[in-house]
Length: 119
Image 1 (cartoon, rainbow, N blue to C red):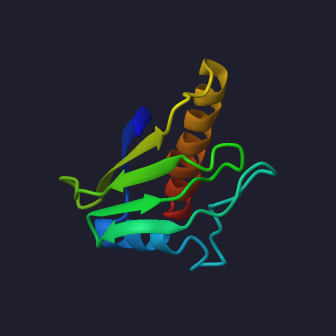
Image 2 (image 1 turned 30 degrees about the vertical axis):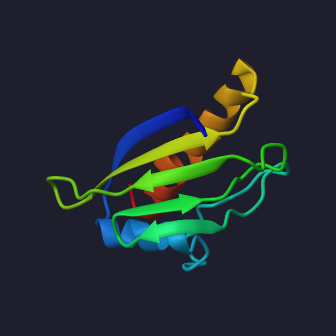
């Protein structure tokens, strides 16, 4: 698999809470954050090492080979320095598609999930 994107950003919640949110995105119906588009599907957990790491299957029907890997180290302020990494098989998507996939992950993880924790 080839890495086509990665981003690290802090989350206010500690690693075990972020891990639970990623492992069970619908666990808190009062705070939905995994809001999918028409061309997206709910990911499955492929692998996990609680609370340090988790891997999802693809979100995209057009790229079922894609996987998303999350690293969840504790930050110095008690939150999580979450890093997502997007990997795909060859052939690589065109640059426009890569940009779209990265933007969606950034929106879901570094905006929606973050806002679900109150920031």
